[in-house]
Image (cartoon, rainbow, N blue to C red):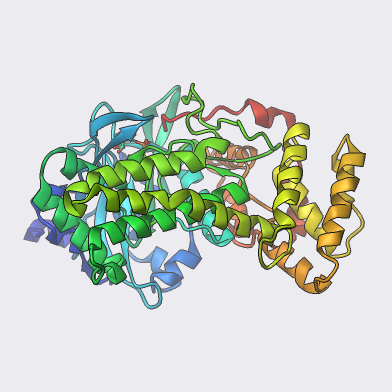
Length: 494
Ligand code: AMP
Ligand code: MG
């Protein structure tokens, strides 16, 4: 609780805070306030859509103390800030204790339509889990996280959300000097596979059970009545993770750091770092400059998802009891993933369901795209527009080997013989975005933001909220990346 001197200074945002995670007990976290940013923080980006979902008034941003509070510069009335502890496997090796090294959970709020949502500020200073880090996040990575989490949401991919970014002139050392920023993130829970690994590997099985029971009660209540609730939990997380990664593959998203501490127990995309959307299709593409082995290359994401689930299964074993039950849950992954990916690719082709005809066509298409390094987003969007009757930019012109493409287009036409053309086109335009957050777009917005011009961050944010619409005002954003885009290097350090 805040003392009187502090509460006089504290911001009252008119939110009713709770913090169920805090009630789990002291072994799960350290209570501490955020470390204020030096100087006067300023707004960089705000998501009106997210604010609306949280039930905040339109003018909430202007309220006294809001800017200071989400920057970590003022305590919040009713909030119980804490940093949680977790562990994890990083790049395939056990990393031991990690934790919220630069994030503070402010608490949770009840929303009008989206249930209970936790608010977390990232970049909010040192915690007991900061290890070698400085507890800060730079403006560049904060803008990337804000834009991409909101873009993924609009694409229909499960993800943590972002409410806002605030910036400051506080210098932060990375490869070069940058400035500090804070992102306010929103999710039903920020619990990761690594939270379970922490208590399992540390032999704290009572805490492990407390955590699992909490997650089941709140997020997987259907598991409670299963013969083995913990095996049922593993099976459900397996299902959600398979579905999530199938969606990543279909939209061409690469996470870049799929360590087990970056895997959400709710199957959400979490911890946006060196992520990238595929430009020219290269299944072996590695988006993280620090990933020398290509462990997290595009084509390896599905099997890494499975590997990470094994780490979770191992952690849950003391609760599940029987290894065959854990294995049964985990062995469902390849089938679940393949079925979900099949379905996603069928939708990209405008087919309501995958079929014996769609699967080989998809395989041949992917092989041709890979051979020619065809732009992933542009290929699918042009195909959709062509099916919708737009003949301006024929898909075949994207290829050197036009004969190969013509052959596949014929096969495709045969598949569509009995389909309703309008329905097919409609499905395609709803599953093949015109706009994704390509690295070079984020880079341009960041370069301006570093000069305190936030107009492109805002414009990109707005356009990315409607990724399936044509973007007449921003045709260049939907076009091929410039040559310099392939030189962009994004690493773990952010
Ligand atoms: P990541 O792989 O970026 O999600 O980070 C792995 C771990 O390092 C997490 O426990 C983070 O909280 C921590 N971490 C990353 N960057 C920093 C930083 N600048 N200061 C403190 N901790 C950090
Ligand atoms: Mg992380």
